[in-house]
Length: 497
Image (spheres, rainbow, N blue to C red):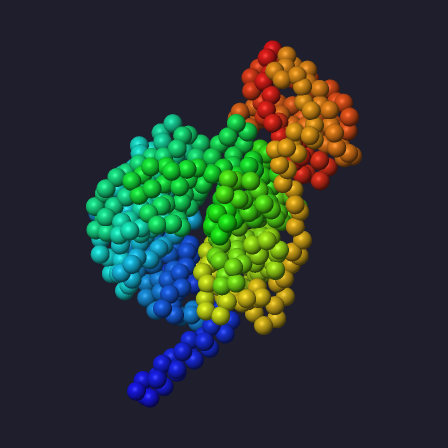
């Protein structure tokens, strides 16, 4: 008995020591001038499981998904390439695909098959990566992107982004039993719904998050769906002009916290701002934190994990560098780090990001992502594993901390109505804008439904007169942006000429 206890203590001590070491390592699995990408990571049983893809000219079909196991020191222990069940074409994971565990200790991987654009493959693997089944499903009549499969009450639910032949976006879900036999296959929501995530927060319920088109811009919709495929409710965030939503979690008061990026100057899709938002159970904003580093900052947040103290760690990228943030439920930013690259092979251009993360014992975080540099060769794009300590550091020097200053720019619908009066609506072409806030100079922009600017004019506090071109008639969307690029009002007008 003492001997067994001694072995247990020794194993536990080794595990703790592994957690205390630093890890930031790149993995070039491709043997040719191609790439390796790490997409998602899980921690369990003192090991790391990674979902990714390899592009290698010497491999069958050149590009395929893989699942790999590492120890917590970053040493590769096992890798399994996932091929098409009928060996017809590549199977390539979606950019933000997820791997999930099953109640029997195995894994679910849901991937798009490229023999037919609407084909998707669900792989059920045991804990040693042996494939128990791989089955092909068809949802819709267009193009699909397989996101994730999860287990709920001994059945599997697989989520897809569906784009039909008319270019319309929908939510697709396939329900199967634990042997992969299809039970139902449904397409949810009207056109203009781009799905991002599926979770199981409550018994026999699915929570699906999506970007959904509205009369003005896009906004977050949170769908609750029962296990029969019925939509129970939909919660809409009161924010508009939000970009993609990458991760969401629930709070004890029934509200939600989520990460996204916004477009502060629509329809400009190149200038982005990372956002963390908390809303209550009906979608009203409790607080918002926005990080902006200037124009064309290419800043995104991809994944969020809850820490043992109730705070959240969020990972992504900023200006081509990996980034992580830790924030409390009340919106206090604890730290924010940007992980700078170090020279490799004399390359002059670098890019890396953290796609996913999971919690480790002791408050550490394991992240996975990609490293890319412009030196030709098999190491041009590599997978990346990085361990982030509870204070956000990834090495002993810890010179990666950056400002935690945020800009709180959310404008409620009530405030939006008081900032400016725009009339008449409908208009025969001439519009009056009474700007009720003091800013040195703002810009009024109007867009048609394809995103083209049809009117742009500087405006000042007080009354302004604008004139639409007589050749235009129809619905327009407008924004008013202040001199710092902050959107202070948005709305729609009907022009009748």
